[in-house]
Image (cartoon, rainbow, N blue to C red; front, top):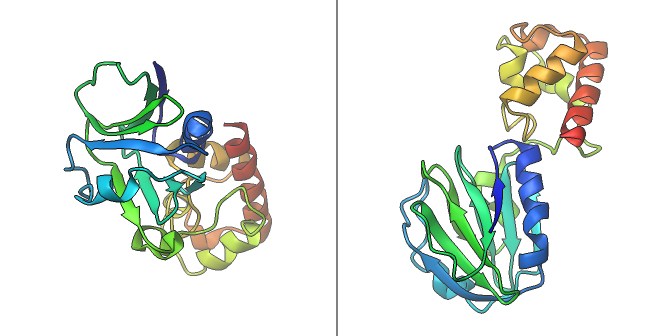
Length: 217
């Protein structure tokens, strides 16, 4: 069994995405089994019928969400606070908290394991970027449209601590507690300083440090 453990921050979710590519991307879903639909957002009852026999053409990530793009829709997966996607042999005994299973034509079984059931496994049609969970997300921190100027413009008149500001997914996605702390430390910014009271130069440095830490992680 290959276990891909993750916490809900961008580097761990991206590592999971890369880890399942060889077994899922480009392969057909032979069977979908839902053992417990009661996640944070219930698994749709129609998921097995919609996803079964479809080919997963691509696996992408938006913030902390994984998107499995198929012929007629997209499976939207979130790992919650304790979840993981696990690759295993189809004859591996199912464990408690293995809630959703995809048997792939690659010969692998993909299992969503989520003890606290704070994750999700949804089905989206037609445009995933318009789904309410994705539509209002901020930019990806490793892309060019995220920089110090973006942070400065959206921080105006904000009195909340800058650490909370960075962890707001509407401002920028994927900067959780650990990475916010590390980036602020490297940029020499106190985490409790008001987001609206930080200079342009400091935000330029902070954006650079966020990119560096997340890329390294």
